[in-house]
Image 1 (tube, rainbow, N blue to C red):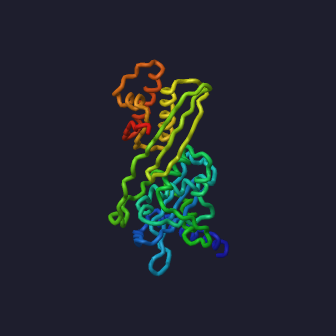
Image 2: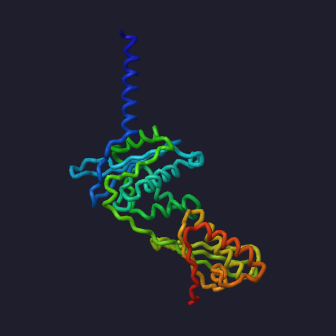
Image 3: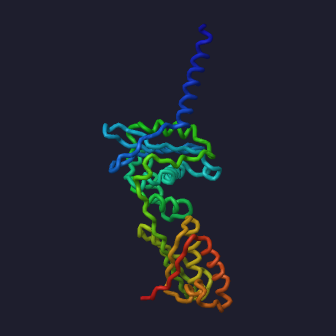
Length: 297
């Protein structure tokens, strides 16, 4: 009898563990958030998976879960450093639970602040730039973790993620309560000028939230003013394309470049044709674009 005891205990633990996994993979109906009260977000990022739990203190000041998520990392995401995986977990939560984040202030409970990491980078490009824009849309407040509470469930979900092909349910219990604002398109202002030792270009981005991000570059090869203008525009279009921005408003005081792209002017100079064709090709990658000439004054 004593020899069978360890086996019985192991079997009991396995049964309990299987019951927990079954419960988490088939979640019950969760509570709806209370309007006006902040939400609580827990996230976890392991080597091969990440998860998030959204909760809120109810009227009795007890933490009530609203929604939880988990997924495996893709082969490319597996190469991210640990802090970027944590950032990815936060971005993952904002994408899947967007209407919650738009309607509430969110207190992010964690050991490290992903927002601070993203915003502290001297130059944002690629995925960090995209994350920065996505996270700027929401009111997320970092709160150092003092008590575990919901973190236990999040860590468990990260250890046993939902399969990659499992679709998150779109039936939110309170989705008819909230309104989602339509974001304004990005605005791009570009400029280029030729010098005796090369050329300089600058690009200014205006986010939908009307924040400004500017860049300046030096072109080592000599070129005309119009070529520099085209190169400034091409650099700007490449950058927003990498950020997966799909709606643009493009402004410049150069009538030539704007009207050539609008096909109101013909491109006659041979040195402008390749730049014009490439810029026109890049514009086709966006859902909607507006090109407008603005007076130099």
